[in-house]
Length: 592
Image 1 (tube, rainbow, N blue to C red):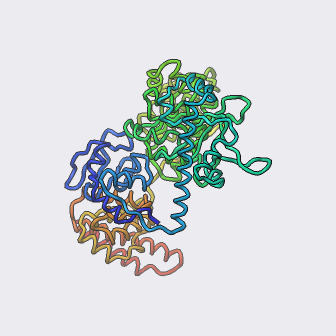
Image 2 (cartoon, rainbow, N blue to C red):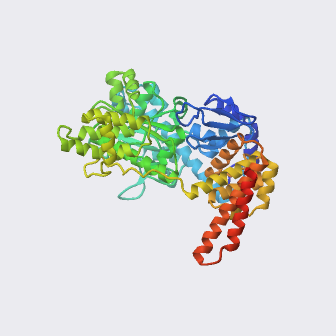
Image 3 (cartoon, one colour):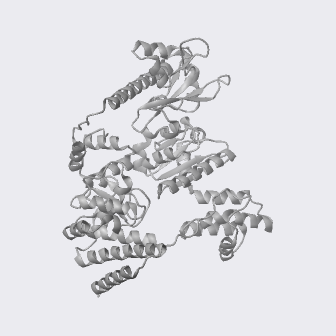
């Protein structure tokens, strides 16, 4: 059940000035009666391919494919979930939100979650007091100072210290009215191995609160100060409240800076995040030492499409780059996400970002970030460095290793730059290098582990049908009275062959007049398509003949499918073929 009423959501939609909201991210210019265009805030471009409809409050980029309504825009640009975006826009517009009536069980679960969040917040505040006020925490303060970290930025991240006492947090929480069950659910306590009762889970460690995008503490990462206390890092265990694979450390503090700068800096450690923020690079986050998960990539994409991956150029760092690259490839394939730009920053050997700041200063770290290269270039450089380029056999091996990397790129400046780089390193003419790369086998036991380049994508009959179906719906929006009649008179399920365009047709049948005002929450694919159709319609002339041509083309495609089905089942097709010819003649007549 929705958290807030539909009426609340629509009042927020009506109140928000969409031009002002989007204009804060990119300069908009008129491009028609109901269309504004600008450079896309979600990917780098020099020619505007991004457009908005200020009345329907929808946006779409024809370059990277993003799109949706004003709530989706706030979610994507500010790294928020739907409820948070709604709350933020309501606050901006001065609208008081009304909560839906909740099922008693849902209300109870929300109340329990709120109590756990309050428990974690008070515990985080307690750990901060211990760090700065307790003599027991002196070694922790010395360690953090040795990393070059100052008190004000540590307080900003709410870094704390857990005392070595067995039950300090348990006793304080009991005194505040929290139960053993709540302490266990929050991950703050564990059961004794012998006997009854609980123990504080974190003791004698530096505490790094792990928060969601809204800054709510969901758990902790805890670093030991002594070699005797193992493991070195102890995290809150995964639970109904805490999922480490969903969180990106520092995202709550980096969100605004990432939106301004158009990038994120992804490092490996908590102290690296803090050091870079202190150094004037506040758009820094970390994946907490784990391989990137799809949920973390989704969190990163909500913040910005460009991520600079900072890694030590040793084997472990290169492996981390490979894992990040592979995770993004899988994520793109599974979610059809385009425009995620992962770049690699090579750090000096043996140094992490905090080391660079301490030894060489903040300016040196900022300069290193400017040297970031696309993942493809990093992979090519890595393969060439690993090759024995002094022999013909070694150069052949290097060609086989880099061929799939270059082959998966679209023809363009990056691919050409890499061909030049390879030619120079192998001391071969560019033309010969390009030809050799095309001939080289796409896999090799000594390659860099890159997946073989996919074959060039060809336009299929399915793609052509989808183009026709989208073109018809855009025409319906461009000339709404005739479009409404066309939609009402046709059999939508038979006329539309693809599930998404069929859903859009059903939706527009009911909402053609104001397509941006009733988009269902969570239906991102439908919202993107409707936004695209509205923006595309803004460029079309209200031409009834063009609408009729597209409708007839839908009929012809439907008949083609019915003829193919009849042929497969051995049924006669004479009547269907005659009907198809009549449709084709009607199209020719309108085109004359």
